Image (tube, rainbow, N blue to C red):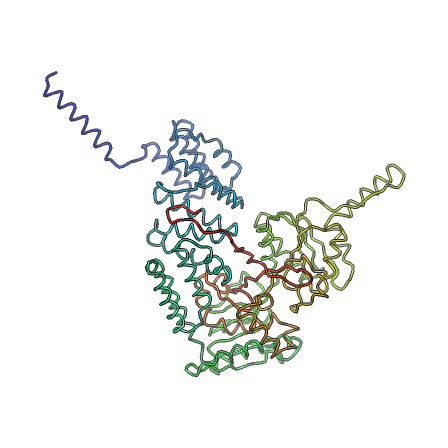
Length: 638
């Protein structure tokens, strides 16, 4: 071999090495073929079959391809809800020889599995503590999982940090969706929570977003007030204007809409007949909000129609109201009339019904909205609160009637969705004073007594025996009016329920603090409207005005008064609430949000009785997060 030929071989080899290094990374042909076959199965709705395909290929592959194929199989099994099998595969994956990227993907799969099993804390623990050095897409997926798990665990501030860290890694629609998810976290928090988070925040970007959220929550619905608040915010946080531009634009659009009330509003309520006391209380709230809104530049007229005198004439009254110029309708109130109107085909202007249709699956007309005080929705929130508090096994005590059955079913359904189990339902007679039969049955004390009697019969002599309740229960949910709740609480203690947390809905509280009458309610955790629980801000001022101006109605039906105020004040917000599921309106009856574009639901506050007086707690879905914010915007959320 001469020198020239040797040099040629060396140069050829070097060139080949260089070209190989510069060539784009591709999967081996066999792997690409497997991925194509698996994708065909996935598109056909067969993720389990795709998982089998990956596992077959993994058995013939070498490390690290073997582990990569196993991870793809585990991901498909998680999608197919085969959680035990997915965990078995993930646990069997040998981490030896895996790159940092593959280790991060395995951690992400473990977190996905834990979150699917409703174990958000375990999901957070499974994720890498730091995403530095990982590809942007993988880091974004990890931060997305961190945000979801933290939000599910009630750690809204941690979720917000993860969203902020994720935003620079995204483009296009992904960036827009992440930004709205971040904003939704802030909008679900109360102003008090936002203020508390801002006081402990150390990151400049987080401080800026919290300040912007407080503007959205607390600024008066006038454009001048918003412009002044935004100008001050931009001066304080100049580096965040570009990132927040889409939200600022939405705030401007929202505030412009707040100025636009319909020129004529019709109110359809049963002001005569059996529902008249309730209807007149709602009307008091509507009128109070109407007079508070008076704006000479944009006058609004209000026309009231009585649907109680002739209930069958509802449709003709609605048509008459529209014919007379109504551009918006509030009402009707009766559930059957709401259902009748929704199905009539004559709804021609935006309408806010003050109840819900009988069939939740019914298709509703455009611009037809439902709004009411739903005990079933409150029971669902009680299930969410109990689940967040760590309870998994419940017994339920409700009146033996249709109302009690609906409330119990709503609690059971939501508690089951969250991974809990209702062990028993006790139905008590609502007009009785002794609820022992229902309590004894639900807590399984009668079985304990039966065992004692059986032992006594077997040995043919009396035995000394202390009855015991079932030991697998870790909470109780009750529903009833204040009299029933005051009787239930001490009777639960008497029947060996001492120490079990007890949750309820708003009906358990009369609405008027009475430390003497409510002393037996000590320990009870319940949800209720800001109008009745919040001692500061607009709710407190509205309650004081209600007690002064409408003392009789406010003591009998305070929540309905708040419903009336909100039904008028929410009108300019409805279009935004219907189009943006994360949007909230902070009302007297709760933080209002729209479900399925038609159904207004209330997020309530939580309180616990202590010495006969309700003491306000944190929000049910975003508990107060007192953690100090020390995370930096470096790809990790501490």
